[in-house]
Amino acid sequence: MKSLFLNKSLIIVALGAVTFFTSCKSTTPFTNTVRTKYNLDEAKLKKMQFYISSDITLQRGEQGENSQELDAEGKLVISSSASLDNISVDGKTPGVCVKILKGNKLAISFFESDDQYLVFGDPNNRGRYNLMGAEWKSGRGKINFGGKVYYIMPGGASAYLKFEMKKVKDYKTTSSKAKGRTIN
Image (tube, rainbow, N blue to C red; front, side, top):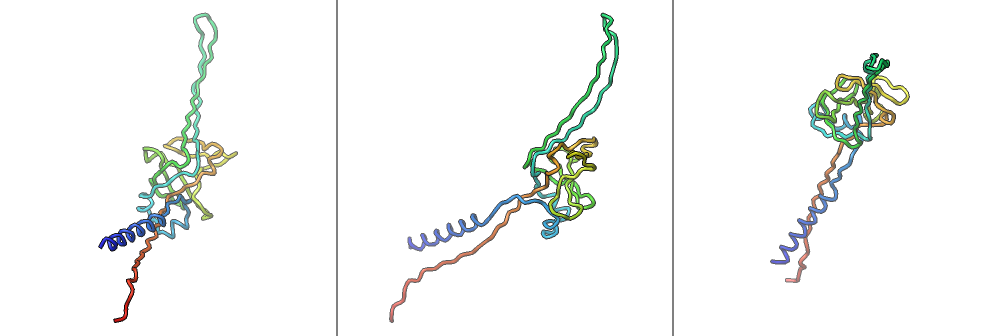
């Protein structure tokens, strides 16, 4: 009886180990091939967890007002102001799809607001979904982010969209032990 219990326990442990070791989690570049193969429509895309492949920095600068005035000592004081806004997104930061755009493009938000998103796409169906910009000049891409114009700093052009894929292979194993047979 004890041997039978031990055999059943061993089988259960073996099945668990096989299932555990054959389930793989991997980060994969998001492509049109993946989108088509797994029939990823808008509803499914909005439930997926996406990641950005590498660090990017968005930058926006504004020139302020220039003013001239005389101080109490009669010196001419010329002042000017400017502001610089940097937004960083680290590689492997999780994001969600907030909308599907025309031309094989997805709006992915890595931020609290759905209005703050980056566009990834593969309009020419060449492979992975890369970070898109309206214009690219000297490695800097111009984008609209949250209703304002920002520039993707050099190095950001190589960023692309990734997702986690979990493959589960369920193998069932049965085993039995021959007890032997004697002549009657």
